[in-house]
Image 1 (cartoon, helix red, strand yellow):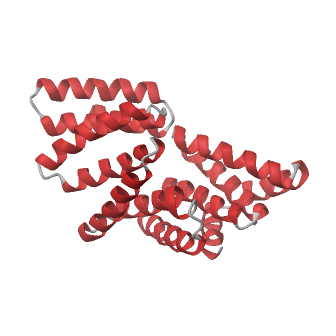
Image 2: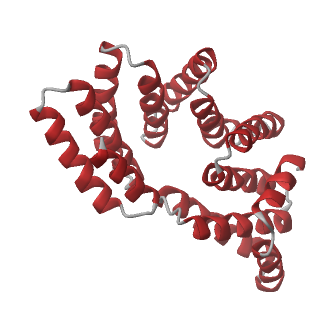
Length: 243
């Protein structure tokens, strides 16, 4: 468990090689102890690392293996966590129908179990993968607001910064580039202060920044970014919820 906790912290700070090394060590240890659930937890974490590295086939295989063990042993909350990541992987592999079905089933199950973390992360994922690309802006706004309120209630500031990025995507579709740039700058600054550097979030935020620079032009972008960097995260969250 200590190895997996260390792997999680390494992944959170962007050190994927160290995270993977510790997860592999944890897998070997659980296997030697004859602990199939521990093996599945390690495989789930390794599958997440593979997804962060965009190795989608390896991520799928590891997650499917972990999911089968979690189901066999009645680990319902672990099933939710693995399914959430697996839905993302299938979306990246081009199987949107399977991804959508997994996501919708996961959201319903999370709500029935009262798992607020999985509910919020699944709402965010559904927005990014389906609702926004499908052009349903009102549902996207409502789902993001619901997810953000959960993160505020739980006091999870890293998750708040992650979902600020999804609000930025919504604002970009709606043509509100200056507000989007301010919110993204606030989120990026807060993540740096918290030491959060998950590779997939950093990658998406870099893409968002490029789109904003292209749309606003250098001068307007620089002004908006400077204003956003000075904006406290709590204000950014409030403005996102009001958007």
